[in-house]
Image 1 (cartoon, rainbow, N blue to C red):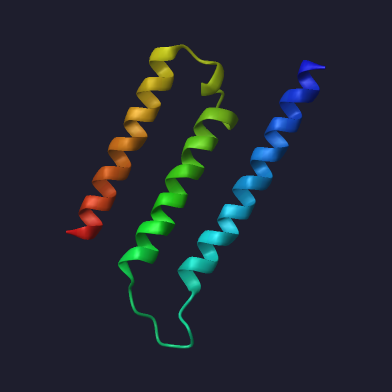
Image 2 (tube, one colour):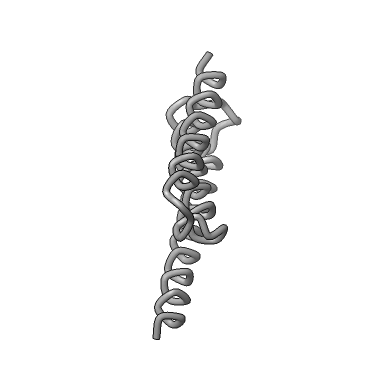
Length: 92
């Protein structure tokens, strides 16, 4: 029963990750018939979606959800720091 519950959770997360991948692709490729022009809000949105996806992958597919608290905190802190640095460099 527990194994079935874990598989259902992983399947739901995989479907969610697939859906937000399509969303980020749609955001990134939305040009409105114009030539490519960078858009800060769209880029920030796509990057935010990427970091949400990374957190799900780290926690659920790499097994950090069941890891010790210090490892969960470390991976979340690392991901938040990485997101902040990348967004700061992009916006600079």
